[in-house]
View 1 (cartoon, rainbow, N blue to C red):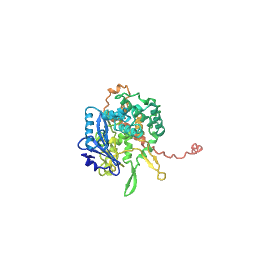
View 2 (view 1 turned 120 degrees about the horizontal axis):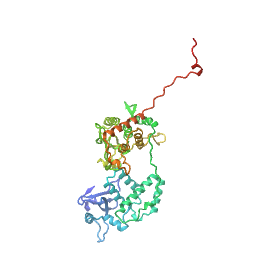
View 3 (view 1 turned 90 degrees about the vertical axis):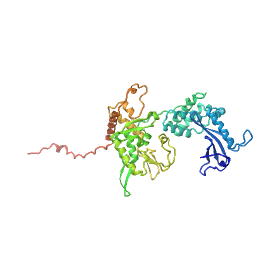
View 4 (view 1 turned 90 degrees about the horizontal axis):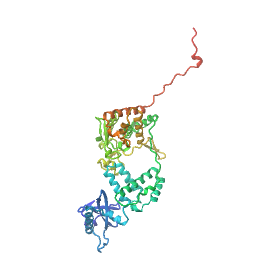
Length: 456
């Protein structure tokens, strides 16, 4: 909300009934604002310093200052001008204040680290993960000065997270702390990183491709995810959006959200090509891969069915759905798309397939995680035979092995990649086909009868 802040306009402002506070910005001085609460109002100044967004608290409205006068809009605006003037000269008043009070906090370290990640082109998914897990699992630590965080504190937090949330999440959260501390260490004189005291949990890389013998049953489930209704009667089933998504992941090996956020402008059906502009690793890892003829047919089916399922259009998403609630989406933001609004057409959010038991209310997984399909696709690349490891790295968007000089000299043609992609698809289609039915053999005659000869 923006107003020309004066004593009179501020007197008329109140937070809405469903919120405890309302943030109002001044039209006259950008960056100057006031947080209006139900009992008091506090003047603030927002600014950017070294790529990090800061907020400096000026003071509570009506509080008596050093000059003996109550703080009003005019005095707060003048103070904001002084702060912004110092920022223009290269200072960071908010950080300087915290340094005087005990040095940079863990929140300052994370702000700096996230800013560096953005500058280096980190993917939206990586930024969303570190931000979400920082706010959820480190909330009580964020205001602590870094100098007060000791090795024993990190070790104890890691042990607590391991017991409550599992070994993998505990390791990941403490890696966030380690990375943020190391980034702050480049800017400030700090003790050694205290996460060196953490006893890291052992981790096992999950590689669980679907066994070939189970692939026909998987395909049968996928093909029946959406009922076909004619005149209010169920006349059959089809894959639908979610089933086509599962098949698409299997036939391309894409990561879960890479596949879910494919847009039509990323697809060239005439040339059989798919572009991913912001995959894992950020924009520097953008890639284009060929699509098999079966994948092209699948996408053509999606175009036709999307027109029927979403009369207002699929908003450009290949695998659309309707948002259940409003929320920010970093993946959409990276593509220049708006945040999710309740009821709006958005990309597929959750690829896991579950069914709810009507009696118990419990959810039961009916299909494996989409990432297991990536394992299956990669296994097929190997088993089909005759496909170079360099082709496998390209088709799965993996970095070549460290120290591989050879990879730097290879420029694979799209025609060769398309041929390999087609071979893998045909291999997988054959594995998905139901096994031939066994024909019943006629009962064998008893041994004595088989050796009888007609007597002339």
